[in-house]
Length: 275
Image 1 (tube, rainbow, N blue to C red):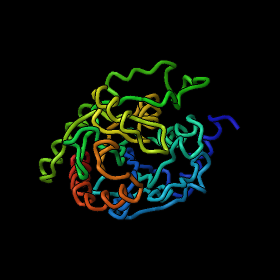
Image 2 (cartoon, rainbow, N blue to C red):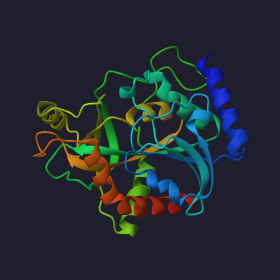
Image 3 (cartoon, rainbow, N blue to C red):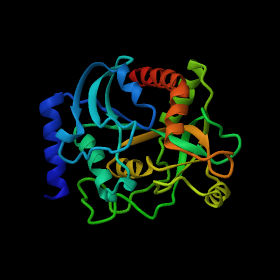
């Protein structure tokens, strides 16, 4: 089956279950942030397993459900969980759910993730609005034949993260009295955490946080014309800065501690999008 057919089938399956009036704004919930889906009012839910083109996630903290409803009065679609290259998925597979959302009419994609801080100031609990990214994997979901009906062969990434949406996140943080910073996110393949030598290298690049997701979804979303914003929750200092071994359990535990700030910021942000 071609990817075009897969996108059509996936979109049709979602319309049949979640309705034809699909939200124009969507959010992907990363590790430890899945609880935000509980704030969705009038939620209609569908398992990724029932959607052609949506591969189930195998990672703890990623529920693998697509939901549609309202948050702060704004119609919102929620992807509770994502897939990663380190799970064994080919890079183009990450683009398919994003393209299905676009086929359904989604215009704005908000991404969240958990990350490691690359400087001593980026301690656990820090919220970082992503202003730009570095792809350190050598992978790209756009590799392969290009479908010009989806997007251009050579998409521009000068402003991958929409300045207006980033401004609204800053405003929402101020109104919610939540401290935020702005910085550059570096994407590593994983699944291992980075070595101290790699962390020193990434910091020298000017990156502020490192993680194993988000960038491929941003590339796919920008390619098909979506506006994008991303919020990274720092859950640990990276290797060589932290004085203890890193674990995914720590990631989830620290995300749980900071979740209240994430929720407050996002609720204000979506209220602002509602206008």
